[in-house]
Length: 595
Image (tube, rainbow, N blue to C red; front, top):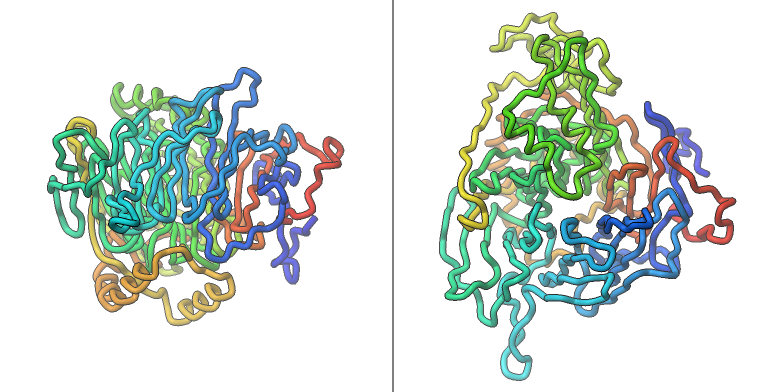
């Protein structure tokens, strides 16, 4: 077992780490990979991704896991912390030729012990709907049409790599697909894609975005097409209630849209470079994004502004995720009351299938103390993994969320580094200079406004969604920081999406000068505050846990799951949850584990 010490041990792979709630331990017997357990040669391959679904099996072992490694796709029963993984018996295994899986997503609504609907996106642009339990392939979307003998094969909808695919929350048939071209498409599994190129009709357009509908006499895919910004659309995420959509793009912008109302809710700009990943807090109040600036950025949904940044990674941040089990609220002495309408309260309770695990956190996080100016004690836990092979855990507490209010006496621990030792005490809110201890960072002094949206027609009825805005940007923090980043990126093989088309890279290079000019316009504004204008978080935990860049971080009820580009999917038991030991299955001890 690798030691937890520093010095020459800092580069060793860690197999456990400690937080305030206890010790998290790597369960080597719960490791999933290719059956031969040989590290995968990741050069030229797409990132390893992992998807989970629960099929409500009567035996109590209903979790299923899907992961891709190179051209291969595996589907297993996930035994987690309960039993050792049996890699010799995959439920389904598929090997693809001419293309590679890039992402996938289960539909939790339709999942049963006899059937599951799994969407798989590919490097050549296709999207496949499969049932790995029945071992069937239902449909192929954006497939090639034509005959190679008569005319060249053509992909009629989008030829670029699929970067993200998600079922629309609450729907059995609608799904959304993002491509490295910067376009998103809405599909219906009941419709075909046709044998001719779709004809689009403009529905809405704005600065650097446009929304089109597919013009056809009969129903066909895609239902809608968005063109957003410049460069790839790397990831999108639906809000917990399914009403909003957050998009992270290569042009460095986070864009949040009202999914039903077809309205742009707000935007945020990375410090420099593209944004690669995005996630929502369990209550939908905050969004965290990460990318090529090596930072995690926390954005307030209600205020539409950056409220904190976290620095701990030495290379690009590839995944961010909230931990709904550790996120908590400690109420003050007076009884807490829900702040909002009865309709909003019921909407939070009835989120829909597949979200029961986080319901307790959702309801508690929606409470505020209505009789006391002091906020409740809040701790949002989120994590990040990056191409530096490190995993970081972060705590976001009320001293960051409510910087101008007195702190709760039950404040939980957060490592916070003051963004600057000389923060201006002037504020339009009229708070006294001594309202907070001097060791705690204050929020930035920008005037913030809450953006309101008007509820419009549903996406099915109106068939359009607004998306939005702006230019690619790259801007260094400081000269010395820039030099360190360049060295770290080379050392930690920060190659981003190495399977991207060369044309995409050329387009990015050609727009660099324009990008820097645009970045200079946003730096120092509410879109992209300067480093000294917002609190800077330090990670609670920052450990090297793999030999190759990390591509997955998922928080489950009794464990957290990570994966690296070598093709190893690892299970980390939460404190007190690890039931496995080497005595249970001594014959299953792997010889090619990550640690």
